[in-house]
Length: 232
Length: 218
Image (cartoon, rainbow over all chains, first blue to last red; front, top):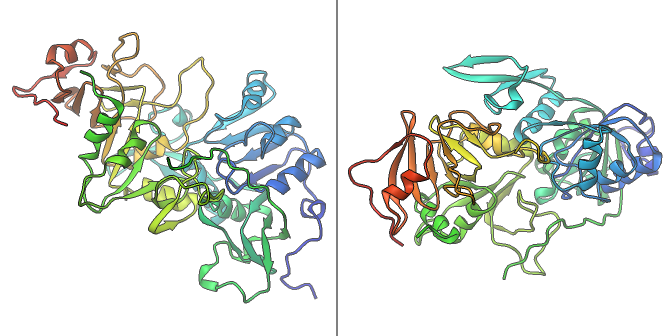
């Protein structure tokens, strides 16, 4: 009986079924909390024409920047993509499409997607280019725009610790978009630094309950620091 | 004399109150954290999921899992909390942040702000700025009063794509502290040694000058 054991034996198995044209939700903020080995595996697989939903798009040669190198991303939905020269070249060259989305709206789109809410109203972006073509409705005398939820075919998520049942704990600000991505995809793949036995994690301290997690793998992480800034 | 970046940060820091939860943007707003007045305690929110941001780390303390919204390594202070991005923006969009300080390219007399993109240059994205200006009731914009070639950034109408509409009421520039009321900038304070005429000459939007405009003191 496999029961609730979500572990898979390899990164290849972790992403089995990922195919061209799919939508992938990726956790991470900058390089903090990115599923670095799962991204490397997508690079290795060579899957193309992906729509990738992530707050950022890595940096040149690191994180989602690897998928830009492989020309595997057709469309990027993100709030900030300013760290990446290759991104700019592909965008200007028409190889890549980008949908810039306010960071809070992006988070809420994923949260709504995971919670079965198809759309929501928000004040964010009203009166700006983000509002173009979107329904506007007033509540209590203030205008709000209608934003649609996001769901994905696959989510690639980086946790800190998980038990075999896929209950996940994140660490510090490496949590960011990871739990939101985890809940909003048809197939959620989580890589963690350590897998423990069920019962070892405090049920009150679980960030992503195992119901959201389909596949789990333990990896080794570089955890590159994007901007090492020290106290004088 | 126009205010230095440090003086601008010190002036904004006077808006801090004991017990405030505060979000500081990148640039001059970040410097405000160095000038919290004696005898008050504030908690800094970083929108990537940290309430209770501390100073930059020592080499030993640096932790790849603990960064600020500018992707710099930081520390967390005693009593800090971490959370996901949806919770972080629930704090922001739900109006729970007591004071937001951010930079801008332009503001106008209607309280519109443009701060995220200059058409024709690479579009980097708005990050959390649109959420911050839409969600916060209490915002101070910090910016230089005019561009390097002397063009006013306080306008009758923003020319760049907006970050938010009708959401700004207070602006601190290197020359003045102003409030936006009734379709005009109201001049509340002058930088030391800067005359009302100098400020008026660099303000393209309608400017109201009250009878008394005190000089800032440092």
